[in-house]
Length: 238
Image: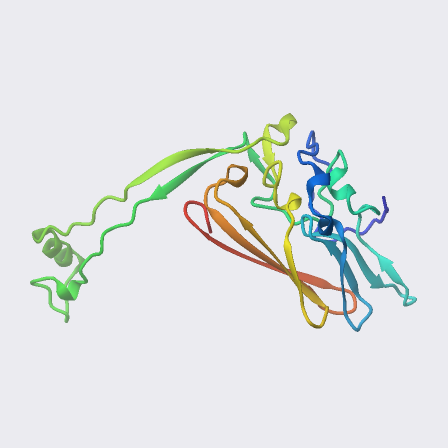
């Protein structure tokens, strides 16, 4: 393992998760999941990551003497990001949720859509030049167009607990975004890459399908940035 004191924002605050041992067969994953992809720019900055977990394995910047120095904490062997017993989340993308969900459960409330209401101008007895809110409501009540109560129902969503000592679901569960293989497309210039992952409804217990996209970009001689977006459908899919 390489030891560096500088940790950048990609590293999660929870480096060593209690009791979060590996829960997948790393040998069953495709070989390309652990082959580093390196982005470079013309200012001496380079970033390496693997498709497994979208994990950043190296970030080399130039020091005061012009020498390239790796400034992230991680493993020399890329397969250790999967196989290591501690699974410290070094450099990985986190999801669907970062941090803990107490008790491995949460309440999901879905609201029923309200029926389409006629605008005031379409209601008999209301003038487009005026009319108080009370008059509009009275006109709607006369034609049976009162606002219906907002219907809702709460459902308890249960997730796998992967931090038993704290009875919590940590960083998306046993197989979160840090343990899946992301699709990768590198830009023609070689200084950015877009990672995509489609999380199916019910994955790790989370409702709703979710499509996630993350872009790594080398921004200058000593910095990099990541932008993420996501969308989906069904309950919890946004």
